[in-house]
Length: 393
Image 1 (cartoon, one colour):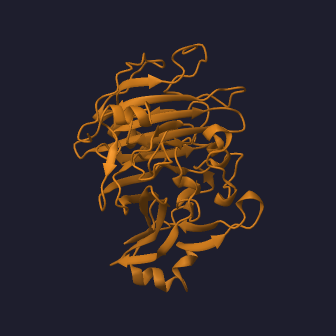
Image 2: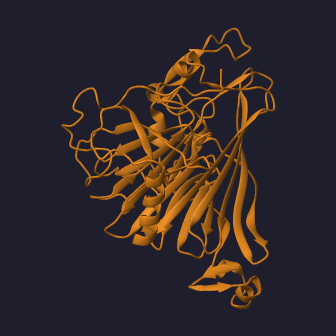
Image 3: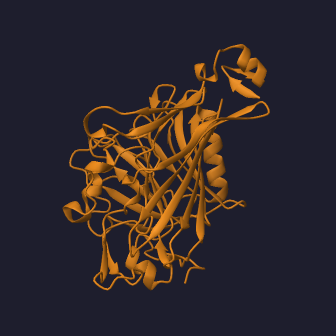
């Protein structure tokens, strides 16, 4: 059954009340037409529950806008949803990525994530190339997808909106990695399902690293909003070496926008439930609204909390990752780099869910607490002991 406007309806009953499903819900292809966004194709999803989000076809099929009943969920940075043709991957010493950084979901990879690194080019069969210089968070988020399909699919009296595309990161003498992304949302619900496959289409043994930069904005993020996660250990904090407490911003409770705020990043070691799932949420109890991200521990063994609380750029990032914050070189040295031979692939299955009301927030918090109780200390001392990620050497 499709739950619309407080009533469960069959497919026939939905059809009887409209000329087309798009009156209530649907997915449609559009194009942005002005400024730095000009020429970007996007897909707009509406589930009929109040959930609306857009998928940037020409930006790796990342999720840009996201709102629920008129309330923003996804972050819009000052950079906007910049056309990939304007992006300079190696600009500003590898930090030009920040000039194309915006939206609810920004994908990082496919062969590099985290900070800039220069690594041996031993996976390239090309002698003039001795090293590979990687910029912040890799290339994939500014590569256009080949849109392979989108629309609606009925399964009995349930209806699913979907889109699928292929993002190809390739170079002569180098990597040929394909991201096959499928996004689904059931009509009448408030959840987004993301299913990714990263496949090595080339014939060179190729490194693979992957991360989601999931950016939640006001009003979910506000003074007093709470970060909820099943934390076993606080592994690392980017700001711990200097004024760890002096800034007055811990990991649990968020403040109002700050002036001259330098980003803070935490790496948490998270526990999974019996099914291997890891739920994390940001909730605003005052307005009864939250956003939950559920990933799989075997797919994303690491996770970060990114706090960008600067006025005018106010956001909190939930970042599931295949690797520790130590970076590309350390992943190689520790035997934790993922290496893909021809035809090998990795899967990533995640759910983004709106928490509508105090009951939904309480249920999410109870689920998280049942897995692991997070520290009740705002400034837990980092262990600086990242756990070994096995099975990759």
